[in-house]
Amino acid sequence: MSRDISIIAVRKTYKEIAKMAAAMPINPKPFLNSLTGKAVLVKLKWGHEYKGLLVSADGYMNLQLANTEELIDGSCTGNLGEVLIRCNNVLYVRGAEEEDEEGEMKE
Image 1 (spheres, helix red, strand yellow):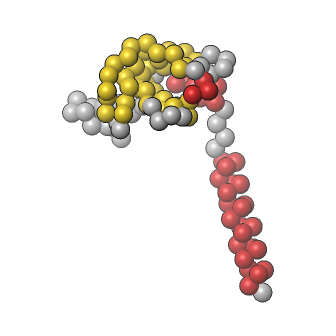
Image 2 (spheres, one colour; image 1 turned 90 degrees about the vertical axis):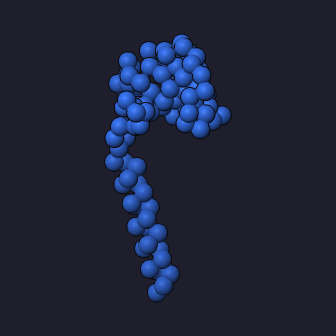
């Protein structure tokens, strides 16, 4: 009897996981196109983070950033200007939050 209950619980868990995964599919190319011209944060597989204006993304998803800053532990370590990031180095890309005048992130 307890084995049947545990099997039902496992099935329910898998169904919940599958339901969550199917809820929000995001196609990466339109997502990148929607971020073009906006501030983005790019994290590389090696842990480096870059914040800048996404100028373009090509068919391979190589990224061109302008006004780029290198971030270590969330703080700016230097301005790099224009940067090209090869696609196979990218862990994720997300829109960067805008800062207010005191340097705090807006919600």
